[in-house]
Image 1: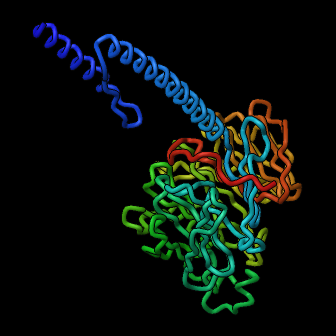
Image 2 (image 1 turned 180 degrees about the vertical axis):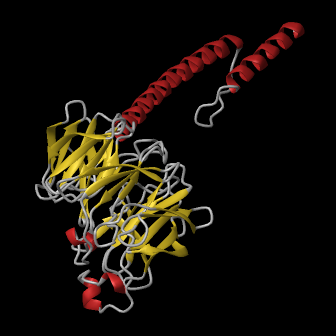
Length: 424
């Protein structure tokens, strides 16, 4: 009997250990009573635990499905369409605003947004032309994170962000110490009074100015190559393009071009293709868009950045605005006053011109199938099919959009869940 009793005690110990190995909510199940009762109790408890495990598995599956659904929704967001103090997240599949929000403090400020990119924290940067104030915007919370006040007198401001999203570069276009405040504000400064433009470097993590650099006179835009090594700055005066080494933040080279009849250049906006093969420069002399009297033709100038030589110049019948390349690099879309011109980057020829009234800074679907063009005069986004070069749809907005900031279609910066809260 003693042997059997010891054996039963041993079995009870093993059974207790087996159940004790299973924890649920921090409670350990123990055995009581005789051997038969113990077995029944153990069986019931195991069944209860298996049932609980089944419920937990179902909950986990449901959560995984929810996360997957949210990920699909997030990856289906084209980006943020901005106009003044209002903005909307645009759905790719629905072709409708996912959400619309507003930052009242930004209304009526004449902002220029960073060249169609977010920083490393998925924030948007915008500059106020006349004051030299830079705004850091959280589009998820629809709020201003911080303002950065830059020194000097301002009339026109341009921004760009490096590929890693670590630094914002802000250009003060017209620096004219001898000009009156009224002339500077109206951009009616005489060319001979214009001094070298200044580029400011801001750390996106600290929102602090960490450098400044004088560049060419009346510099009109800044663009960073996809490798993040160089900053390219077109000028209305002096050389066609100034080249800055970003590792040293110093001017290291320039690109020369044909001068206009009065001896001035007239370069304006500039964009590099995704692989860095081409540099597209819009030649829009300032008499077309400011009061500074600089003449010259309207054209698209194509430069090989590896040789820093002009490859081709394409005449345009309207003043060009901004270039954007499709993610696959096959096309470059140039905004004009009443349309967009689409250039095939293999043939370097215009293959189509699609009517859009007052087009702004556009974006593309991640698969390069569609171009999304803000039409500020129509308060809508025009969708162009790049296989047919036709406008196939549009997205109506409750405000006039001026720019689309892509929602990181390359995955370079990572994704957040659905941005901005629905307010309309």
